[in-house]
Length: 380
Image (cartoon, rainbow, N blue to C red; front, side, top):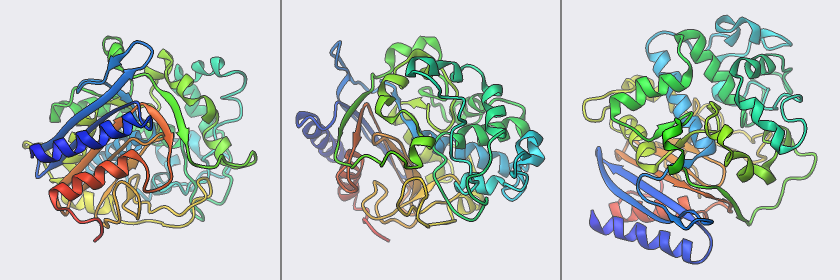
C-alpha cells in the first residue's frame, strides 16, 4: 500500500506546485483498513503553517453526507419515517403550503424551499455572523418560507436550508441537537476525534485558512436562483474564516474535519461495520442509497443523481460512473464517499476554493489515481 500513498503524494504536490491547490489531505479505506493517509501544502499561506494529518478543514456541503447519516440512523431506530410530513414532527414548519412536505423531499432537494430567508443576509458580510448564533431563530425563519415550486414536482439544490430543515427534524424526534448526535452516535463509537459540526475553542488553531481560488467555471447570471440559495459566493472564504462560522451549527455547510475522520465515517457504511461498530443496517444503507431523482437541478442547472441525502456516482465526478458509490461533495472541491461493492472509501479535504470543470478537479484526479492503484474500475 506504500505505492498508492506515494502516487497520491505525487499528484497532490504537482497540483500545489502548479498553483492549482494550496493545502490538501487525502484518506482512503479498503476493506476497513486505512490505505491512504497523505497531505501536502499550506494550512495558512499568511503564516506558512503547513498542512499535517491533524489539520482541520471546512468542508462545506460535504457536511450534508454526515447529516444524511444522522437522519438514516434515526430512521433505523424508528424515530422517523421518510414519507411522513415534516410538520408532524415540527408543526410550525407546515405554514405557507409546506404542510405536506416530507422528510424524503427534504433529503432529495424536492421540498421547494432552497432559498435563504430574505431577512437573514441583509447588509454587509460582516453583519452575517448573528445567524450563526440562534438556531431557533433560523428554524423559525425557515418555517416561514413559501415554496418556490410545488413540493415534490422538481428538484433544486437546498444548499443551506437542507441543514436547518433536517437538523431540526433530528432534534424534534431525538431531543438532542444534531451536533451532539453526531458526536454521540458517529464520532465516539468509531473513535473519530476530528469531525465537528461546531468546533470547540481548543481546536481552532488546527483549522486551515480558506482562500477563494481560480475558477474555470462561468459565473451564474445575476438573476440565477443560486444567488438566493447560496448568497455571498464571492465572499465565501472571508465568511467561513470567521470564528463565528467555525463555531456555528449549520448542518448543510459548516462541518469542520480532517480527511481521516471523513473517510472513517464512510468506511463504517461501506463495510457494514467497522471495528465492531455498525452505524446503519444493511437494509437501511440499501434504502438510503437508492436513486430517487436524476432530473435537471433547478438551482445548479445540470442533472444530478440524488439518493436520500447522498449523491451517487456519475461520469467525471470523484465517485466516477460507479452505480454503487454514494457520498457528497462540497464547495471548492472537498468530498467524501463510499463504494460498498469494493468496500472502498475516499475522503479529500482542502482549503483553496477552486471552481473546476468536471474531470479536472483535485478530488477527481486523486480518486482516479487511487482507484487505478487499487484496481477498482471507473464504471459499473
